[in-house]
Image 1: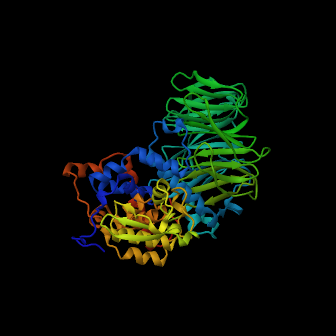
Image 2 (image 1 turned 90 degrees about the vertical axis):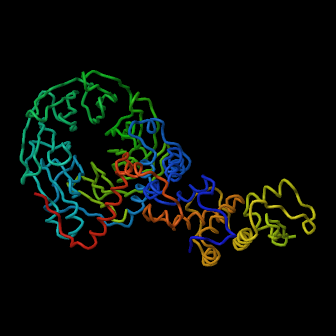
Length: 405
Length: 189
């Protein structure tokens, strides 16, 4: 195609092209491939490292709509990673319609409603999912085993712990990303587990009846942050037998959902108040009242997302709790049980309409909907393309990230 | 007179005079604008429209493409997905050019604002370097490595973007090994 000295009738070289025209070539390539080309030469390096070009690409991907200011001003925001995430999510949800899902059954299932689901990857890349249910047991599923042996369901459960709690397990979270697990629930007990051992080995267990059932638990470096039925947020020392190191009455009534980032804890309660508590002194930093009745909150990209019982997702700025945008997910009368905001999409689990994925931007477009589940879904998790949904009958449904994505 | 019967004349920078039907000319937003500014009453005796930025060989190819596509819908905006697949006709047309000619055609399609053609060429140029290493891209596009040794070394230790790039290349390498390894359930202890 080309030789060192091309025919003399053609004069233009690639570098002679107008810059905007040159970038048009890159518009058709995957974002990561474009980024690799910044190493080719100085000209390309300058053009490709231009944030405004990536912002323009984001806007084009979202049909001309701009991202909320709270998202672009968030300290972790970079135009390239967001453009790349959008590209990934679009392709991921376009592929799911052709995929086979895996559903647990028989002995590898729980036998009661699953309220806690957490996906994670070990350091060597193996994929796992932790579930906690009302049958009081914890299970760890091996996603690679599920994918490779779709029929032999005996291999699906990697480890389990029956009777992990004396009541329903409401929430789990991972400490140090892989080898320690926190669980909590109806029995007002917080547990720390070593999950490298078989079976689970309980490192410490703390009963705290005074504050009632634990509705949510988060691992935050050295402490566990808990939302409680009796209106309080309690803090426990992970390295010291889960001893209580802090407590604050944050709401009037049960706290139903909790999130944290940096210096702040975000909580939502039956009092319909959304509150920010400063970790450093456990005092209220900010709060707003009369927030739509919600079942779950998710903190991501500078925004707090609420899953409302009337079928919508509402977003508020994380810094000042002013309303940012909202959109309808399902008709009124159908609740949104949980919302997860990823870098490139918004995912919502609904009571009667299954799991739905949406594009970013103030007016999101539905990318995919599973439709009604075989049983009412309760809780889900999403990690780098893998999906896990826990249902009311104790079963878990998995979708695996496509290999070629 | 029907659209296809109306023939305009254009004159290129190197003096060539070429003909283009109105219907085909409508594919170039630039030509539409030029004709709007100087309405032509007597088309047969008109002075040729001067295209002072492109040579005969290139304009000829663009006219050919426009004539071939004159009955197809015009791209309204820059949405990448909407252009139809490259057909055999075009493959031959564009195969005749070597790398340089393609840039000339690309620039002319841009200046004449023939959007579908511009997008097609962009895709062809992108396909040339898709998935290639940056060293290979230098050869294909005849670009000089004008980084200093220190700058090159710095690339490996640069910002978080590089971590993503490493992850991507690692994943592509894993895919290769995944295809050859026997699938066995990975056990943890």
